[in-house]
Length: 400
Ligand SMILES: Nc1ncnc2c1ncn2[C@@H]1O[C@H](COP(=O)(O)OP(=O)(O)OP(=O)(O)O)[C@@H](O)[C@H]1O
Ligand SMILES: [Mg+2]
Image 1 (cartoon, rainbow, N blue to C red):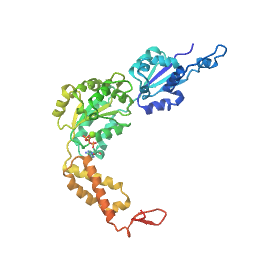
Image 2: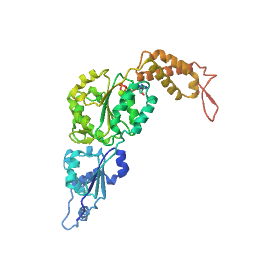
Image 3: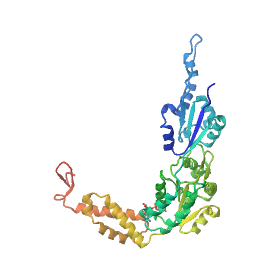
Image 4: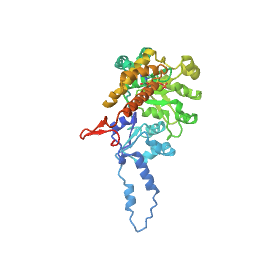
């Protein structure tokens, strides 16, 4: 009797799955095998009585595949009925091993019941906050963010419970305050300490109908939050403009914030000891409480306020911005404009804008304007604009 198919289910990012299984080869793809079989079944064959049917015999004795592999994105190509009858689809192929990456919950449960003997589940270990992370966060904070000292202290305290190995649920923080003062940057910085590409969702980008199927699950081929969580690489999950989600969706997050489990119609995920960062542009806790309601508001482990930058902060940011931009300039450009002058002009312009994103744009514009002026005002017949390394000097004007 042939041995039962060994089913191995993997939950984690694609890169990790590929490391364990190897890059999926075409001949090992479950999808490819299913489509090829469908194609064979569709063929109509006529066999005459005196003709021996070797082709049919070949089909009957088709070699048993050693292993078949399906990746997270593959299930979307299958019809709904194929998902419902996944074990049947596997039995028709009868591979020795089946490796499935982030499958729908229903597929997992069915296979576990039908192939109980060789069934195995592997989960990716996400990077989590350790005491070392906290030390790095404290010591390197000022390199990433100007000001926001309170944020540093409050976040350190909020993150501390994540360092306990026994902890099984996430820490959920709300970072709030004006635009462009470092909320996303803080989440990025923290995630950078842990590794993996940050999973980031902008809630204002969803229209209600789309959002409902994204959160609660629609057809298994539609994108969903639970599936995205399964595919994520990072230990930090960033939910930007969280307050923009309509109130009908708030209850979807109760269980997630309480214990880290998010379940929709098709997928189930447990993010465990992760950090969930929500952001909002409300200026006060009261604003957030009114927008989100008590039930959700009370589920945040910490609400951390970002302040508008002080004048001193703006000056420091401008210095960093200008110095950073100058480093990217060509040598001749650097000579054409004066960094100190740019800074002074920016101090005057910056007094009106405390949004660092805007300050960055203004700096770029200013430097470009000054460069254009300086370069175009140069006499093209006497001043070399650029030189070639091997040949003679190329002058501006006609030859450029
Ligand atoms: N305090 C700060 N110190 C240094 N750079 C900053 C600071 N705040 C913001 N920046 C820089 O400004 C840009 C925008 O910041 P960020 O994306 O963190 O803003 P935000 O607070 O998330 O704004 P929004 O509410 O619009 O999402 C980034 O490039 C970031 O590095
Ligand atoms: Mg942001």
